[in-house]
Image (spheres, rainbow, N blue to C red):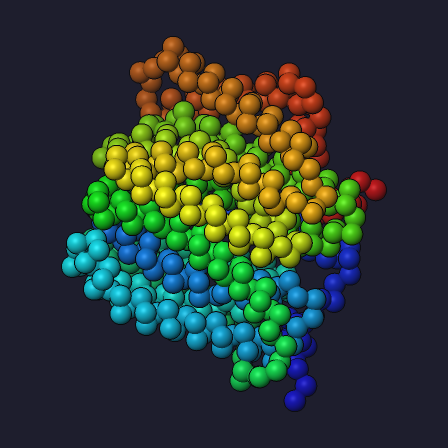
Length: 508
């Protein structure tokens, strides 16, 4: 039976070069708008739930998610990226990958459910058995969607995916708030995770017309398994390293301390992610097609990093200065212990603002094996740091993470750049100026807030801090060498995104 046109289009890369660039940048713009909406909804639901639940409720669910997250991250085994990147792909290949993903997810779900008593024993809380059993179902639900999502991304249907993502966030947030109002306690946070997973599963199968056939031996998926295997193993190591701190805090410091620690992480990194996700959607697609043009590859990469750090670094610096007011505004006064952890994590967050850019390079050049080797080394160092830092509680763990990131980030960039057109010197210049101006603006705001209406209402102080920081930040860019040119470049890029125009067309 011939393939229906709307299904056949999911497997082809029939877009012309100009159309591809336009779709990539336009897709990034759509995703950026969706991310802004997602951020607003998530922030709002977090503020509401933080006032309805206790820190130990968040800590209990965060402790289980630290374990379930390991299975959830490994379920795709890097195979969706194989589907997205491959120049040509067949129905048989995607079907085979679908059943591999489904089998892995089912096995991981069963393994996670079987480990529920061990999770409860590790954290010394019997209530975690039931929570683990319920949250384990999100792994199999996710495993049934990854190839459908990959096909939608391959055909650049970013608008549909963004709409589905927003729908899942809204539905799950409303369900969680209703559950919390009914007295469900920490189960309302389980509803938050489960609700999003169900909406995503139903929505992806509805949006994507493709349906899997049977797995076909000899369909040519072996190279895709090799490519995806390194990505999957790398992702597993990263999630293990990112989960270990929460596991140690939950084990040795308790659910209440973990609730405080996990909220500090969420509030610090959530704003930065809103920019890195849409830029990644554009960068990987475009850089993969610029490998034969080294100068254009370098220029596009550095421009992308410049946009990322120009916005993300001052965000981190401002969050550091206004941490106390922001925590009180978003979470409430009972969450005051978040502030010192929040500030100790800030140096790591500043360096993490450009971490996603190394992924652009690894994926665009297909250097997933090298990426895996570096992540294996860096994750080992990071996990050792956590074991050392936990002796001093949550502050010790946060400090250990910041120190490890500060020591590893730039060597990691140097490893990533090997055998590419990118140069460490020009990259350092790209990140040095926003780092210096962000820190300088933060220092100016810190001193100004001590002498200008220090007893003003909370919202007024935050507004004043924001104005002082913005003025200081832009003023510093105006006076540093080369700063005015960077400002002009940043201003020039926004119309390009708004018109969904390729960077090359703008330069013509």
